[in-house]
Length: 428
Image (tube, rainbow, N blue to C red):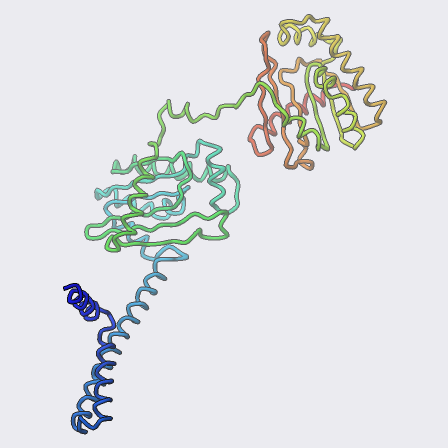
């Protein structure tokens, strides 16, 4: 019984094999060859058999050519999917669509170039949805510049805002079904999802890191393509759902305002930056603790050629009393004055012992923030450049601290403020 089943399975596999015609052709040719050799079959039979075999061979060739044509067609279709430029028909398809979803960083060219088309579409009842990068988040905009040709962060932010203004104006003038959202993330791809009366398509543009030209690849899928159209359609809808409405509410505007990151201590990063510095600019009331704890380091830095500037409060000026009252709840004016004078003696000793580039100035201005600027001048800036800032609080313990790097918007502001006080100060 088992042998019969095995034979049946073997026969079924042979008959359903994709090469069954070739196997039959080979077997038939073998049989008639043997019959011809033993002189069992005559010439008439062999001639008919040869013609039948040639017909079967021709049939097999037709099948093979169809397979080759299908492979070639699939290859051509693949080449049509991966594009270097947007399809020429995309602008026309946007104008004719009844439901449009656009996702991108700024989309300035798209919105400005198709504004009239969008106006007509909205007035005839089409739905338009647009998702752009949130221009109010400076850190996010800086990330967005990484997937665009090299340019300034401020320029990208302005381009997004201009696009949003045009969309708001379009919404107001048409009173159409236009919804605007912004993303608190960098969209991983650009999207043109278009739905018409009879068909739909989606055009995808993948992001590149600082592309030299148009980012790519660009891909287009019709709804009839099935799987990939549905895949990118679902992704586009998820991106849209993650956006927030524009213009933002008052609460959203407050939430979007950047908040400083204060710390209690600068930690080892301060000394690590100072170790390799070529230029140090230090301001403060007295800076006695910094000098006494790092005296030998300052000595070594001066000996290796580091340029150091200290800006302290003039010990004989009224600013000492103001500083003692405002910034030092536990210290008297005499104590604050004594600490400044101690720092001046230490600095004089350092200058005499090293002969290095050390300049000290005194100001009658009650300094509100102390800074340690490491390689802050533009010609000196490098990987360790930073400004370490600390606020002198009013009769409260602790001094909130934060760090600025050259790429931070307020770096030049704090540096310029310290430099202005330095210019108005006199030599110690």
